[in-house]
Image (cartoon, rainbow, N blue to C red; front, side, top):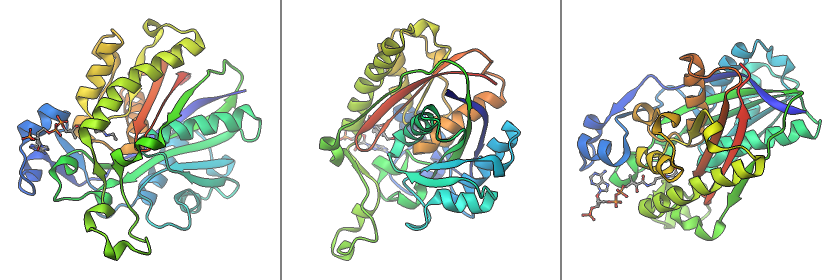
Length: 321
Ligand code: UT7
């Protein structure tokens, strides 16, 4: 058995923060942000929370799949920005959706989170333990953003995306995933609940990033892991219709396409509209491509995530909707 995506959904906050408004908060410019990142605006949660966005994206994905919430056997929420430490966001989503038969837990793998959650769901399905799984990536990164730090606040945004996986007969693809805890300091955010946090600099409770280092890591590791994935499945890059990369920076996506010798048209992007939404970026993009008719039954897609940990990975799937 393999898991096929039978529905997608997403939710982004209505409040928009564009580069011009941001340049009133920190010393930056629309020109610099566009040129270095490709981001033009991002959506910022005001009324919304990580849980409310996750639940709405999940509800839309279930509607798309034509599946009642009571049929869902597992809810996985990937997030680094949950409203509370306990209970997990997935249990709160379960309550909102009335998915009373689901087992629920969260997964923290930062910007690789949706990808790792998707792989986890596939493993449960392959093991025959669950047949209908709702996988969600949801983030309120604006809560973890230091709005005085121009090297990070220009990048991030809020939102949620979801996919429903259903067990079906079909080809099971091998996936690829890696972590490098030795490089953990490249991207960090300390908990405000630490016993000693009052004695520590406030900046540490926000995301802190060695941007150049993460950039170098991403442009090297993404093509590497995609090549590893394709080799393991004996599929050629030319056979892939679309590569859905984590939406961190337009230059990272362009560099990956170039290193793999592929046209940029195979690498759809929406980071100009949402910024980097961490674990929500891949499912939001997937849902947009589904809704605008880009994705067609039988197409082969590669999903690739990378980020804090450091962590990175890729999965191959055949689109069935
Ligand atoms: O999702 C998790 C993974 N995260 C990522 O993938 C992020 C990866 N990194 C990046 O996307 C890029 O490194 C950034 C967008 C964060 C930064 O772009 P960069 O081209 O690497 O810039 P830089 O850090 O090398 O800085 C270049 C210059 C510096 O000035 P000097 O030292 O050359 O005088 C910075 O101080 O740009 C300056 N700078 C800015 N200037 C205007 C840094 N941030 C800004 C800013 N506006 N917002």
